[in-house]
Length: 161
Image 1 (tube, rainbow, N blue to C red):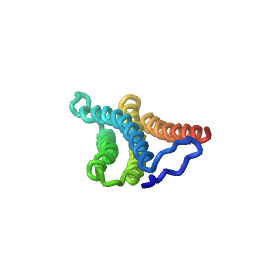
Image 2 (image 1 turned 90 degrees about the horizontal axis):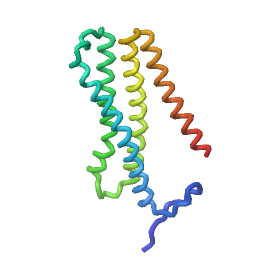
Image 3 (image 1 turned 180 degrees about the vertical axis):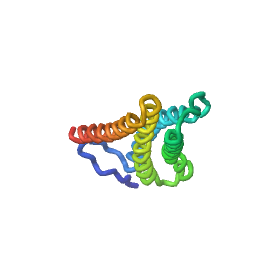
Image 4 (image 1 turned 135 degrees about the horizontal axis):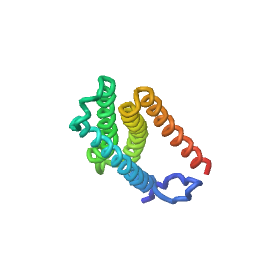
């Protein structure tokens, strides 16, 4: 019985089967999702307790609307981050790990975008309450753009070696 070997990757020199590579990639993806999920859970949990604070009633309609959008973004990000695990449970031992890894990768990328928006929005809300609408809008946009650019710049640096 021959074992199908994964195509050699000249950059890493690994000699592994396609199944071994899928297992390794799945493990790496789960570690990334764990890290991201912790931050999303903390930020979303913080947002969920805000209405129970005394000053929450002082928010204007725009701030309350932004708050609700942020809560939904946080919940959506958590759902996206948990979906690969849920799908893994549903397809466990059905030999679809490569498809699972590809799906998990796509969901992780979408959740990163949701997290960037969540972080920018939360920062915008805080600055809006403390300094005013213009400061909140500017800082929110700056945070989202800075995150997107830094993630892209770092990615390109790593790709270049």
